[in-house]
Length: 134
Image (cartoon, helix red, strand yellow):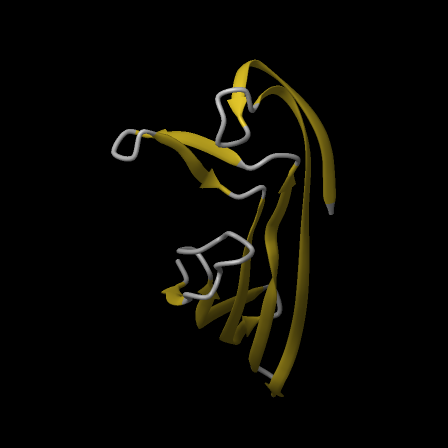
């Protein structure tokens, strides 16, 4: 899935370290890529044990310009956000289904997600952390 947008801003965005580096429009490309797989590990008449995996980019964003902001302590414009950002994740879950009747099934499961929330810039996304699923 992907999007191609061209934004017209009602104000200038700072695109470089100089005061003259300003734009009021920008091309933004955003796409998402997911890989999903479901496995039935064990099945009987009333029980099913499942293993599910999902992972991918959520989303990958390419902007035409880097974002700069004024740093009061240094009295200069410095980069605040890279033009290429992304979140990459992997999620695994184990679930058990119990069929009470043909029309009524209960499910219990547990899972974990691994995602680079802290660092999303392309050149610095190396610190990962575990997050429990809701």
